[in-house]
Image (cartoon, rainbow, N blue to C red):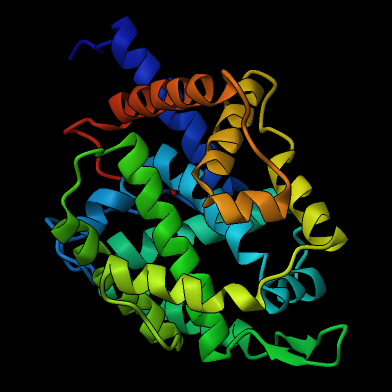
Length: 290
């Protein structure tokens, strides 16, 4: 049979290959997660829709990280027990893969991934500078990490994927995302967007920003690009992630987009989102990016 080497198909394959290379460690034999009808969630579920766009997940994931690190215990857990300073791409890759597996893979694989993360959490504990003990498996700390991810992914999807997403679908996403959070041991877990926003408000008196916070944020936002050609796009997506932060979080990080920068960042991020969506939407291809 003749091979279709049309420019459009060739470009799609190149884009998909490069994105999947970022999210899968080929040296470890990792391949993209294949979507299964035996997953924790139905293929028609809202969470499949929200987690299915690689660009909005990248933007929302960085937004979530920037929010999470404002909690001293969340930041200490990463700082004291993680190799992120030497392997930022690896950490982001593992997080993306966990989300892909728990959303799309066979139920057995999802449940195994959850148990593996819980086992890691058992060894992450320590003491903050003021003498307060912390542990990654603390239900309330897990709730903070979860609610930041939930709102980060949801807001990125609304901003760049589905601006007219209904309030009922937003609530459905929050409820579905909570299933994995509960399995990890998080408590409380919101079931609506309003509850998620109320939980973030409840945490605000505990949040702090100091030199360590700004240092970690700088590492996240200036991580090396996988290739020189991808560097401008990566920088733009990082700025889009900052743009999605609530105003109080921007102030704590001392990061804002001024003047014409904001519309330019949004227009550029939207263009990248649509380009990668075009590349990945192909009836003959079912794997995810991660």
